[in-house]
Image (tube, rainbow, N blue to C red; front, side):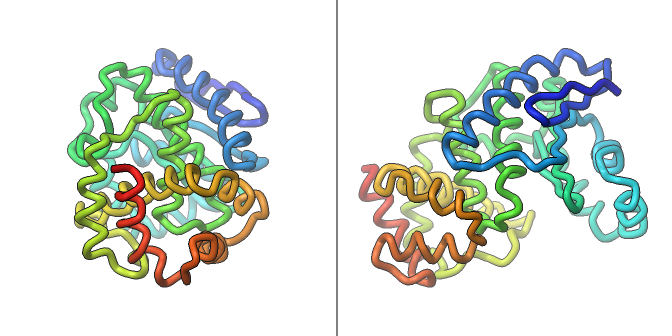
Length: 266
């Protein structure tokens, strides 16, 4: 394996996937700068980006030794779910204690993946190098913010808005606002504790709500998110502070914000 260091972050790849190194390297450099300037977040001391070609290879190859044993013993518990996800994902963000790891598929695997869910959310991107950069930026944002244990909508919203800033253009389909309007009419007061892989409607809701709410926050309360994230507040407290900024209680946030966001952007 080859290792390149970028601002303290390690990029790890096999020589036969060297064609993916340049876009991932570029994405790491640009993303670190963007995540710092946008959200005030820094990479963990032990942070790695791996160009991954198999689920098991990535999981066991990136884990510290004590974790390899635990992962092997618990394989029947986590592997079936991750195997179902594998064809549809271009990248992962994993945490092993103090180590944060991002895995990004090379273009040759991304083009053969299942893009059904992504096609409903993102503007089509035919440049494979740009796709790799988008995935790298998205997953690095997750890795940098993971210690805050953010609610899923904010976790995804931060990552998606960071990708917009990376490319200096909108990467999410404008028509997803129509879906947000539908969701807002029946949105539950609290997000689901976990997002079931089989429930595409819930996955769509969290991605779309998270993206548009994060954009709305940046538009109507500029600097609020960066300030809250910079204080290293836990996710629940951040959500409560956001609610206060709009004159709401935390348990009212999801029920009220959808309609406000749609009204703002239409």
